Every structure is written in structure tokens, then in C-alpha cells.
Image 1 (cartoon, helix red, strand yellow):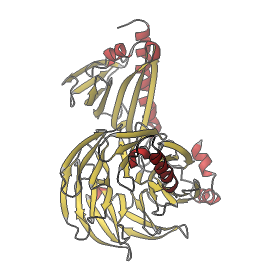
Image 2 (cartoon, one colour; image 1 turned 180 degrees about the vertical axis):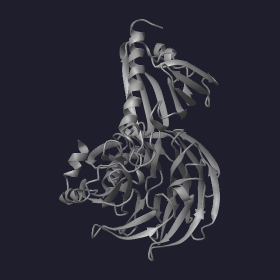
Image 3 (tube, rainbow over the protein chains, first blue to last red; image 1 turned 180 degrees about the horizontal axis):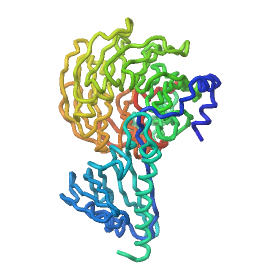
Image 4 (cartoon, rainbow over the protein chains, first blue to last red; image 1 turned 120 degrees about the vertical axis):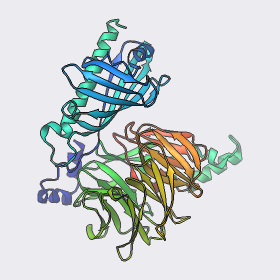
Length: 183
Length: 323
């Protein structure tokens, strides 16, 4: 790990580590980021047609339904109801059919549903050679617990794990359905 | 950017060749030290070629950076690790990693090269750090959660953006005492000083604006509208450039009249921003897209781009002239 290597770089710092054993502990939340992607054996236009509508999250296996207003205009909203309960309210920041990308933000979610705060996200389709495409899903967020010493279910690791899980489930399911010839 | 464009030498002519040769000898160009918060590195970027020349391991999520005016040292804060790392810029070598108290965040260097000032996000103070002794030699209490920090070109005044007090603090650099404060917009974050006019510009994260304050009198001169979530400000060629985190844009306005001059699209989550010494180019670290962008300060055109590492923030004075 790079950090470990760096810590070994100076003897002085190594000595100070011994004096301050709590160094590795988090003090106040740090902004986290996740980027997950999948390559799909289908043209980018076809993939975008499936996921590019902000009001339609039927491609994600965890989403029961999406209800919203404003279509794909900046400021549009949607409320996602998850299978097994829980809702997430989101707002559209940017939508670009040409770049095949949209950017949205969570405006309201219970940390019991998704253990994050101040969450924003980007979903982008890029064409690749041979009629393939790459879908990238990025997120920026803070953990669910805003202060020091978070409980285990609301710490940085819990937030990263939850968001990564949402992205992987969506992307893997999307690949499967599009490569199976689904529309 | 090519030197040919700078000097407008006729392409292929003997004269043009001679000018290019002379220029490349006398003008070594600039480089950026970019803190990559999410992979614990600092990337050294040649700003002529827009290429990463070196990467240094810096522990604890590096965020803030300040390079001494002579270009010899880079100081890097790590918010998570609570450290100040000292880099020999020419040798690309980490000389020391010093643990500080509280939450070190913003950093600035006195024009003379010492001391170094670090804002403490948690305890509402700045640390005054001596590069000679490698220790904090004094502390100055300021407003709540000081984030950005800058020093006037004459070295007389330190300015902090006290985020949770919605104010700037002006500190006498000799006496190390707060000599005044100024109320600004909501949650000021980055701060830049225009030494031509003696004005401080601070980006208000909470009110989508930049406040302009006269440093000598503490008087609020203007509040200029920006895009969503302005983060930091750079000044070049009489213009102010503001990174809008949520909109992936720069707001540009006239630094003297505050007249809006438009917006420039950049990559996602623009944060740290700084100008070349000649004011011709603006460099922007894009935290989400892992890119440092080079933008022509006159035309607003994107002149180059390079991947620096994971989570570039480059919060502070991150450019130096190569010797």
C-alpha cells in the first residue's frame, strides 16, 4: 500500500507514529468516491436508450418503481421505491443525450436505506470499438455518520460497500439483459 | 501550448527556429504539484507538455498544497492523516512528514519562504510552522473551521476563509494577531489575493457567490454570483476564475469591475485552481474525473488535459516556475 510505503520514508515520522498510535483513525468525514464500469457487447446508442431516461430505472434489479416529474430537464425529480422497502429521492443536475451522460443527486434518503450523505452520481455510456460500449457509474459522497467515531454500519467502509453494491448490481444486470438480446 | 504560438514565430522559417531555440533555453516553463487525495500521492506535472513527470507518496489523504515563492519547497497537508509533508520540489523528494494537531487543511507560505501557515479545520486556529526547526512555533485563533488561506504579496497580512463563521480573518503576519475580520457570504472556502488591487476573493460554498473584500479596510466590496458550489478562485490577467464543484464549470468575471464574462465547461468536480505566472493559462484539478485541465485564460479554450491520479484536489498555490 502506498501509504504504508510513505510512512516508512522518514525515520522521524516513524518515531512520531509510536507516540501517536491513533494516527490511522478517521477524524471527521472525508469525501469518498467510487467508479464502477462494465463493458457491454451492444452499441452505445442501444445502451443509452435503455438507461438514459432519468425517469426509468426499470433496468436496475433493486428498484421496484420510479416516479418523478420534469422528464430529463435539469431539476427533474424522481422517487425510487426499492424492492423490499425504502425510498430514495433524487434530482437531476445535468442530462446530455449527445455525451450519453446524466448527473444526479440524492435529495433525501434514510441512512438505514443507503448509509451515505451528500451523495451525487454520474452515469455515462461510451462507445467502444467493434460495436461495444462501456458504461461507467461514478459516485461522490460522505459516510452516513457526520461526526467522529462512526458506528460500524455508518462508517466510510459501509458507505463504500453499499454504493459499490448498488452500482455492481445495476451494471451486471444491465450487461446480462442487453447481451441476452433484451431491449 | 506550444512556444511557437506564444512567440508567433513563422512556422518553418529560420528566424522562427532561432527564436524557439533561444526560448527553450531561457524559459524552462512551469510545473504543478497536484495532491491526489484518494491515492495518497502528489503528481508533478510538466505544464508545457501536460505530462506527469513524477509521483510522490504522501500519506493521509493529501489535500492542501503551497509552493514557496522561490519554488524550492512544496508543503502538503493531509486532512485524514493530520500531517504536513515537506517536499524538495526540484529533487522530487519528501524531506519530512510532520504530524500536526487538529485537522490541517489549507496551507500558505510567506513570500520570504518562511514561516508556513496551516489552517486547522477542527480547532479554529492557524499553525505557524517553521521550516528551519520543523515545528509549530505559534498558533493564532481565528473564526470557525478555517479552510483557505493566502498571504499578501508584501508578506504583511495573512487571510483565512473561516468557513463556519462566514467571515475572512486578516492576521498581522509580524505580530501574529488578528487585526480585523469581514463578513462574507455563506461558508467561504477558498481564498485568493489580488495584489494589484489589495483585494481578497473568497468562494462561498453555501451561497453560490464570491465575496470581494478590501484587505486594508476589511470592507466588503461586492458579492458576485457564481455557479453551484463554488470552491476556489484564481486570478489571472485581471479576471477571476471560480471552480463550480457541482456544475463542472468555471465562472469568469472581471476582477476589477465584477462584470460577468461567462462560464467555461470543465471536467467533473473542479476544485483547486491556479494561474500561470504570466496569467495566460489557468489550471484546474478535477476531483471526480482525475484530470488536471489547462485553459487559455484569454479565449477560455481547453488547451490540454492530463490524468494525475485518483482524486486530484490541489487546494492552494500548486504551480512553480522550473529553475
